[in-house]
Image (cartoon, rainbow, N blue to C red; front, side):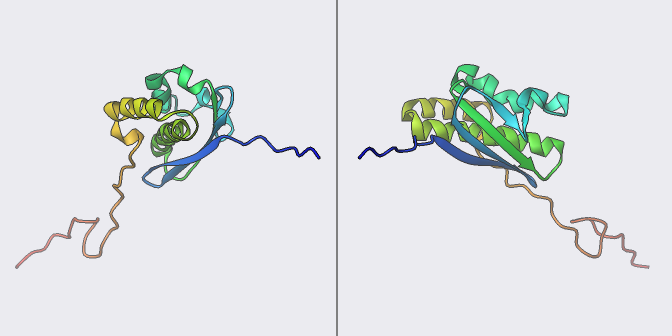
Length: 148
């Protein structure tokens, strides 16, 4: 009796965060497609921040992305935060994919290149907006007080 097994899907899922923006990347074997919310990465808006989203690709070279497809869903935050979340999730997904399905040596090379350029490509920025308190205009500022 012949049993047919489904080919094992080589895929990883990673996320990137910046302030309240969250980007989730599904990375699997493919032809080098990178899509953000269904649109190609080449059409990312705003245009000024497009190179920020391209940074992991430009740093590591297109050849490392040629064998993988990435589908990225991003929500929350503003334009800038979303771009930073996207670039972090792309970098983390590629490192995870290379660790799981390629080899440890190339994963270490990729990680070193990314960390040397910008640590926030792999490590999330923990800073958050501090909430406003009573007795003043903002989180720390207080109303002016007079003694007479």
